[in-house]
Image 1: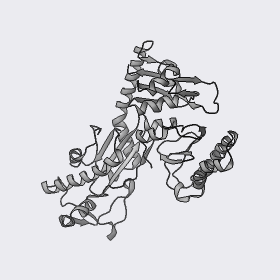
Image 2: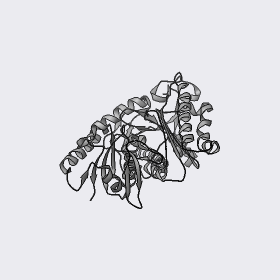
Image 3: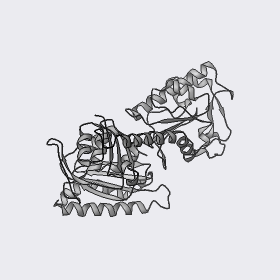
Image 4: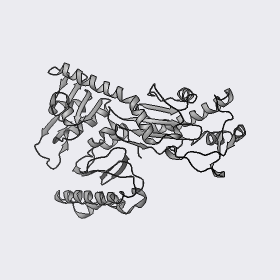
Length: 394
């Protein structure tokens, strides 16, 4: 699975010359369903191709935009490495793919900038969290939303305590002994005991000695170093999972500033991704719900005053200038139009016209870029029943 952050969203939102194609579709991880996905993408690419042709683009210009996406149709490895949803963003000089833990509705949008609103459940507030499953023999990082979970590929992170010590001090391996009992595969499934299954472990089954604690602490510092590169600039709630004596050591080693107070205790190697997701969601969901409900109550209190609005014509410029503190935006509705930031001129159209963007998408992206909070919800959940609901900083 790929990870997407607000800094990358800011780069994607930068308007460049030419037409931009944004494709979203659900994908599958089970082998008997994967064959549907290239067919689904081909249909969406054909739809985008027709729209570009209608806009007057010549075949070479269309190919320059869509050829990288068409090349994916026959990429067997690509389709074997999917999550719940796929986003493809293509322009003449840019091509991005994101495999994400969210099942998107199928759509192909052609506009002057990338259409990013479907990404809000991943990038916005009110439901995105991480789970870091730690043991001496394994490190797993999961990203979850309310209904989905997927494992994030880790780079520059030691896979185990043994590897961390090997990298830093080969002599430290002499402190280990090997066991040949059954191990656990991904998700905790038992594996057969063979010579290849031997794994390094500290002597004893209780708390480690002071020397061993120092080695574990150093191991966790190396894990944190790798995660700092991956999570730089993020404040997604992070839930720790592990045996009770390990987690305080990781908290001591970590520089991440949004670790959830409650932990998932026990050996995470015996828990599947879904089980970790369910336990973590039980810890973070109450806070997500409280924050969103508090924002909705504040909007109702301030509605009709200077610090709240449900008017798109007021919300879009405010978001562009960094004045939006909290935005409720509907995922299932678009409001098409144009906004000239230099002239502060906004036009709203009943139907999409060439050159239009989704103004709701624009407001959401600018709110996130300027550090505001965005709740992406169904249209029926917008406080006050308007096209959006905005709390202004001033």
